[in-house]
Image 1 (cartoon, rainbow, N blue to C red):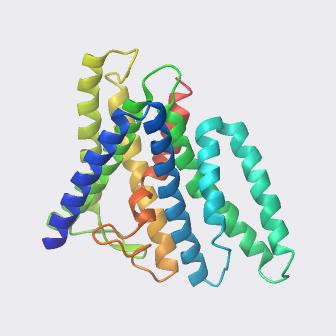
Image 2: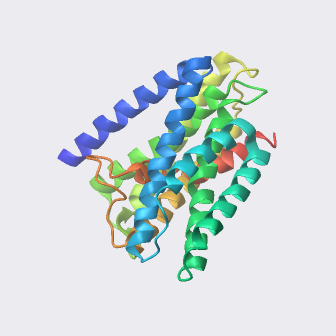
Length: 273
């Protein structure tokens, strides 16, 4: 119960900080700060990912953490074309660095490029969502984070208090079917609250209709849990419980794992509607 209390406190603090940041995110100075913080969090997660790869004997220079920071910024500001150019440059730089050694080139390149796609691309897309041309992107970023993290929080609490049946014992023994159900309901609840708020703010600012809040709530609730399990698979393979040792959170990758697939889906959804 002590762990539950610390997680609840940290989660509440995180929600307050995110909400405060989003309120001023479109201001020139605060906007740059939001981009910088998003890129920094993604870079921390990438650094932890390289640490997991090192545990499996795949060594990639951690200087690529700086490259990850730049890539998130490029994707956030220039989108797909900038991302393709940046990934091409990363591929070139990585090859140039690997010219010095013959062993492990295939694995090194695979780990590097997967990590950039797995972490840098979704984090950059969060910044792209913030700058939506048709609506106020701050609402959609707040929606993305709130639905995802509410799903995480309720899944954790529900699993700790009422969990009985294991969800994926080989990957994450602590996760339960009951926790997954609570997580889905928590995400749906957050989505419904944003639907109610969208009625007051107007469709030109934030449009979340009667069907949208259900569909998005379910999809983000399910994808977020898959994102959590995907990161658990990486940690399990590297024989690590957490990606880092931040008290109450684990690590940066633990913090954003469920956001990664959700950011990709929401970005594609918003650009298709």
